Image (tube, rainbow, N blue to C red):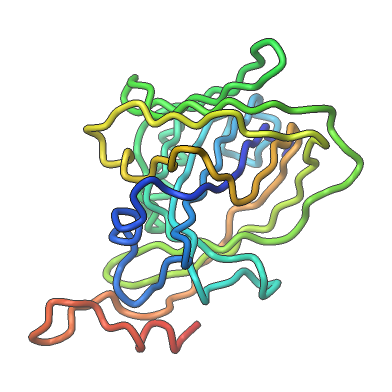
Length: 233
């Protein structure tokens, strides 16, 4: 309940590198959008058992794989960075590419600065100008796909958030060119597809996963089957 969440999407500097992160059988969004959610749960009383923690996940927006509303695109997780060993174990058991790290969201003058570290090294820094929390709410579901035990699986996350009324991403920096996460860096000039900041964002982890198909190489090709996966969505 009421996590502080910065959630947005951008167009990448290297669309081909982003598309290469998506397994065969799935299709990236035509403009290769990358999404990121950086959030902080400040107090153990805000969760039903995970305690306080921070998390940032990134991935590639998908085509033809929508959330239950039929409109919101689903996504393929490429990186999932959390400060909690318990959350990390939960996520790994469900196919998320979880890493140890931390995220902070701090006020600096008229902006918020969100930073995500991996093993103590700052990887991503986003700066955003925000206003007061509005009266409108964002409610719906997010859909994310992962690979688990050779299977492609889908999970649905319900969310209710109270975004701020004024919102502008000022900069997004990827600071470690040698790290694989650098492949997701934004183009210059920065092009934001959508996003919001909410000081009160509530969500639930799914209780189960839906198996969509096997991630098995086709005989003699070394490639994963495409039609067999998409036919099951």
